[in-house]
Structure formats: C-alpha cells, structure tokens
Image 1 (cartoon, rainbow, N blue to C red):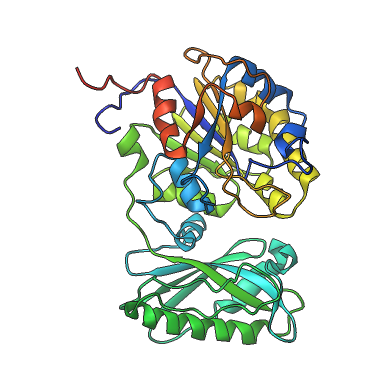
Image 2: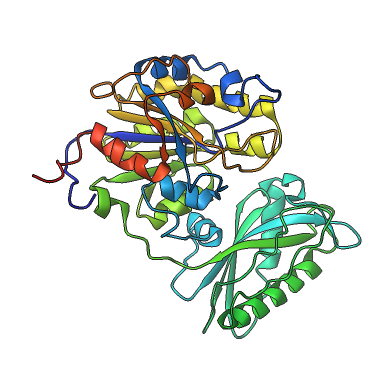
Length: 397
C-alpha cells in the first residue's frame, strides 16, 4: 500500500455499525438487519455490490479491537492490541511503552462474592463518575496509577512504574455465578504488575463494598502501546474518526486518525459531525455503537430499531457525496446469542463511478452471502476502497 498509494481528491467513508451481523430468531426468519425497515440501505444495495467479511479467520470470534484493526487493513494476528490501551487512548490517558493499561468494568457481586451482573446494571455515567473518582485515591509509592471514566459502567486504568509487563490474565470470567478472577501473570516478568493490580483491586473492593450495584470490579485487556504503523503513512489518506464511544476513538488514535469531537450520540449527530469537517479530511471512519449494545442485551427489536435509525439518517451522509461508501460491521453480535460471534459480517459497497452492481436488491445477511463481492478477509477491505477511489497505482509493469 505504501508503494501503490496515490493522491486525488476522492473521499472514502467507512460506516461501521458495531456488531451488525445477526441471526434469525427462528429457522427461516429474518435477522435483525433483514427485519429492519431500511429503504436507503436497500436502494444503495440495488446500485452497489454486497459481500461478507471475515474479521479474523473462519470460526474465530473477534474482540472489537482486532476486528476494527482488520477493517483498517491491519492483520489482527500480526498486530495484537489489548482492549486496555484502546480504552485508555480513547479517554485521553497517556500510555507509553512500559506502562500497563486495562479496561475496567463495574460489576455486581452477591454476599458470596459471585458475579450476578457483569455490567452493574449498566449504571448511568452520572452514577459511575463519582465511583471512579473514589478509585483514584488508591495509590502505592512504587507505582503511579491513573483512572478515568469511559462510559456507563466502564473505566480505564493505567499503571506506570519500573519493570511492569502487561502479560496478565483478565479478571472477568465472562459469566455470572462465579467470582471475579485474580490477576494472574502469564510469565515471571509480569509477576510485579500482577501483584500491584491485585492490591489495587482489593482496595477497590473495600471502597465499593457498600454500593448496591457497582460493588466490585473486573479488569481485562491488559496492554501497552504497540507502536502501530500509521494509517496516513500507509494509505496516503488524511483520516478522521467520528465515534461516540471512547474505545473506538482509542483504536483510531493508535493508527493515527484524528478524532473529531461533537455533540450528541445519534447517527444523525455523527453524520452532521462529518459534514462539519468534510473539506478537511479524505477518509472518514464513522462508528455506530448501539447496534452492538442491543445485540449484547438480547434485544432483537432494539437492534433492528438502531439499524433503522442509521438508515433514516443516511440521506444526510449521502448529501455529502462520498465517492466511496462502505457500510458494514466489525463483527456479528446476534441478539439470540447476546455475545460476539464468528459469523461473517454483512458488507455493502457503493461507489457510483466504479462499482459493478450485482443482482441483490436489499441489504441483509442472505443477500450479502450471494453478493458479487463474495466472502473475504476484513483486512482486504481497505485496498478495495482505495481502488474504487482511484487511489492505487498499477502493480508491476
């Protein structure tokens, strides 16, 4: 890509509806995307091409970090980035080589210390911020610890000190009815960091003991700055990130995208934000979070409604006249499963000057499985977008 990239004024939009892929509630029924009323997506489908992407590898369920890196063209097996550094970058915490960052969840435990709600009832931001402030008081002389609220029940924590290594096991058991796990080192070099994080968690439990919902915490995604190659250097694109949720701002910052701040949290607000800086950038990553949240909640109708909200606002984005528009997800989150899954992710590619339309007439999993683009690795999407934007030179003589 570095050798083939070339400049022109064409603009590319990558619109990612988090967890877009789904499953039917009963055999032969529609998925959430297929059940949603999406006249604008369907119109683009008739004039574009459909396909499916595989975020990591067939059968492998991806986390959000590697799934987004794949969409940005980075091989997620080569560039392994932990969730902690993504959350920390997303809320403006500094993470340097040698620091250890983790993503934290408030959770609810019962009198026996077993988790009964992994997300503390999704406590609202205004309730969580004072709790994060109290956690900031837990300090040790040998290390510096910084904690910052992310959104709702989530926070980020960064530990700085000498000889800290991030090779640590998550404390979230990913299920209820069991106790949070201790921080375990994956090698002897990480023992020091494990000990300090376990001390910090014990202090947090004391502080939160009297809370009704957020009376404990879990930590996951221990990581440090991976030093990723930068997006603009690779592709010759000046990139903008427009995202509500900090983690996705974080992964964008890691690859060198500029994060545009804006008011509001609905699709129309995000498309308006793109309009405000349309002349400044030539690549726009626009992230929609709530499709994934509704899927994780098992809310089929809610996920379909969020998809409809994006479709309803889409004319605002199309009015900007992007030269290339890709509409997809980072992974699948079927509401019937309530978790990320390994299923292929629907993709709609619209590039009015260069696309070969296929014979599909609606945007949904079944149509995408029969689309002209076929099924391919998500990390191959960026070259396809660059090609349709006329931003790649010929390879070879």
